[in-house]
Amino acid sequence: MTSSGTDWTTHFSPPLYLNPKRRYELAVKLETYNSIPNITEANNHFVYSSNGTTWKTITLPEGSYELVQINTEIQRQLEANGDWNSSKNTHYITVGANPSTLRIFIKIDSTTYQVDMASSTIRTTLGFNL
Image 1 (tube, rainbow, N blue to C red):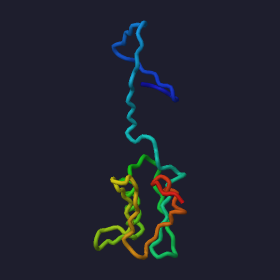
Image 2 (cartoon, rainbow, N blue to C red):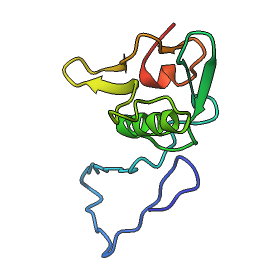
Image 3 (cartoon, rainbow, N blue to C red):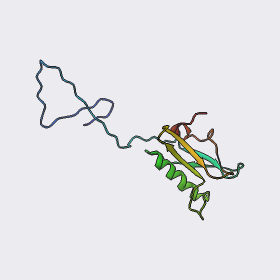
């Protein structure tokens, strides 16, 4: 299958010979394997604070992310910033999903940590509205 736009051309081997007096339909399955970036420069910021006064921004590299990968990258950068519980090997902020409700949650396991959803451009990708 080849294309440089929205119209696709394919060549069947061996060729299909169809009766011109009959009508046919063709079903096509297209699998992209996460090749379309859902995180770009327009939606790659996650803003949080560990004390309510100093705000930090995590920037995710452009790419094709599943929710688990978004959480992994945010937690990796939290560790790099020293914002995690190294003695218990746990994170103060976790992004996850509730499969029963099909909704995403942000779990904060500290009374001092906050997430600024108004400044976080990733909010719409995660399904949060202002």
